[in-house]
Structures are given as structure tokens and as C-alpha cells.
Length: 401
Image 1 (cartoon, rainbow, N blue to C red):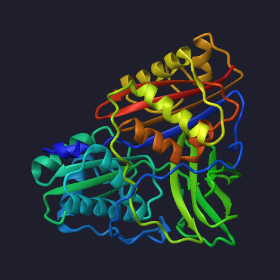
Image 2 (cartoon, rainbow, N blue to C red; image 1 turned 90 degrees about the horizontal axis):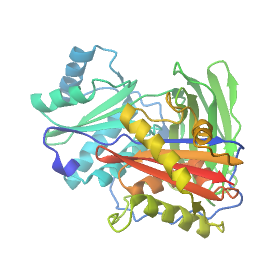
Image 3 (cartoon, rainbow, N blue to C red; image 1 turned 180 degrees about the vertical axis):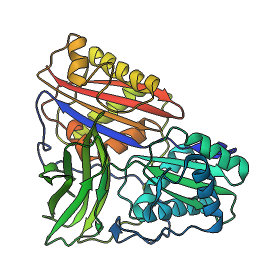
């Protein structure tokens, strides 16, 4: 995708939603072994010491020209410049300078790394790589026509030939907190719900062992707070979700390095030949592989659940939205009931990314999604996949009969 850049290109939006119905799973059933992490390629980037809180919003003259074009088209409220996102866009522009044009999947991996190195806690992002100059900026503006972004950053490659735009819609304003908290203490995470459709806030923590649990979130008005305790040194993963009109949405997903050095290398997934078997079957195999590695029984495919999952993917792609609560079909429990299915326990994961392996990796990196993937009580699963541009929209339905 980036490899075929001509004028401007929108990288696939990176999104994950998870939802559980008919019974609640708040924790993985046991200390699950963390999956093997993919091979990483070293890149010399100094990591941020805190998530959020960057105040430097100064743009270069060339970056300011892009911003001015955006304001002339959409007004000053198009999106608020954010220091962390500006830094992330510049880091990714450096990737393009140092590494050249990247295949679509690797471009996403390096962008995710840039966001983390810049101290941005955002997960669902709208990235665009564009050619510098009037034609490239014009194409960028076309891609931003229907956006609902609240914050953004702009960066250019050192030769000035390409630009990187990173935009997000932040439903939560999260106060700055350290990337590497003390292992013998606790971390307080606070913030404010700013989305008009924002509801409850939920938090999940994955420990170095791979064990996942849901944390208690306190809410007073629009303000929220939670406390994270670290029982062992190592890499933890904190996820914050908010209940939106379309269902629970991942607002932040960040690693925390308690008592260990900050990992400053990108995770670049290996190439994966997806042409040998249908992508739905490949994803099912990946799911059952990690379940068996965790000492859990594999899930049986249920073609009825496949159809429910596929119909939901088509709904999202055809209607141009992403979430669990559909205007046409309602929530998962409504879709199951309409199909004549009545499991005693059911849950749903959805994701959008490039390729089956990257979808699976992203789901496993998200504590709230990993809980569903490793749910000990589920017996069956259904999978739907629908292409959406250069990416794919995926729905996983888990059930117990």
C-alpha cells in the first residue's frame, strides 16, 4: 500500500472493539502464558517517559502549510494539534526516510511503534501518508472530508517529499502518567469523558504472565480514576474502554514497563501466506493454537455463528461504520436471536487491520479481547471476514451451547 504511493494514501484505520453478552467474563481463567512475541527490528528512537501531556505543538513552515490548507478547507476546528501526535507523525516520517516505502502491514506496525515512542495512548487512529505539494495536500483534504477527528499531528520526511498525518477521535481526555511506573507501588490513572456519546469507562490489565483481569473504575461526573497495582516486574498492558453509541470502544491501549527498561524496538510481524486456506479458517486455527497453548480446549466452528459474524461484517462495511451496536441489527444478542440461536453465553470481538496474522496479533495484544479469545467456558466460535479497501473487517462470535 505505502509501496504503491502516488499522491496520497490512507492507511487502514486501526480499531478494536470487544463486547460480551449473556454472562460476563471479567478475568482469564488462570495465569495464561503470554504468547511468543514476533521478531523485532532495532531502530534508534528515544522513547517518551510519559503517556500524554506533550505541550510542544510547534510546526515547521512546511508542516504549517499543510495545517493552513486544512483550516482553509474545514475551519480551525478540523482537529486540535497535539504534541504527542505531532511527535508520532514525525517519527513515522523518519521511518519512511530511513526505511523507504513500506508494505501496508509493516507501515501499520511502524506507525503503532511511533505512537508508543511519542507517548500517545491512542489506539484507534486515522493515518494518511501523502506526497508533499499541492496535489498531495489536495488528496489529503479529500480523505479528511467525512472525518470526526478531535486531535491530530503532522510530520514530513527529511527530504520534504512525503508527509504523515495522524488523526484520532478521543472520547477520553487522559491525564499524563508514566510509561515505566515503580514495581513496588501503584499507579493512579485519571481523566475525563469528553465524548458526547460517552458512557461507562472500563479498564483491563494484562500482567507479564499473560493473566488478564478487569480493574475497578471510579466515576464522579465526567471524571474517572483507577488504580493499577504491580505485583511483578515486567511488561504490563493497560486498556481503557468507553461505552459509545456503537458499543464498547477501545480508547487507549498502552504497555507499562514496571521495574524493567522501556522496550524501544518495534514489533514487526513476519509475512504470512494467506492464500493456501480461507482466511476464516486460518484465523480459527490461530485462535485454537493459542487456546491449546494456554491449556484450554479448542473451539468448534459453528457455521450458524459464521453467518452471524459475516452478516455483521457486511453491515459495517456497507454502511461505513464500526462497532457492536448496529442500527439495523442491534447488538450481538439481537443478531443471535434473529438467527434462531440461543446460547447460554456469547461474546463478540471485532477488528479492522491488514491480514489475518495482524488481526490476530492485535486482538491478543488487547486485554479485553484476549479475555474472549481465552474464555474457558466457550465451546464454539464463528468467524466472518469482509474486505474493506486494503484492510479487512473481522468479527469473531464466541458461544457456549
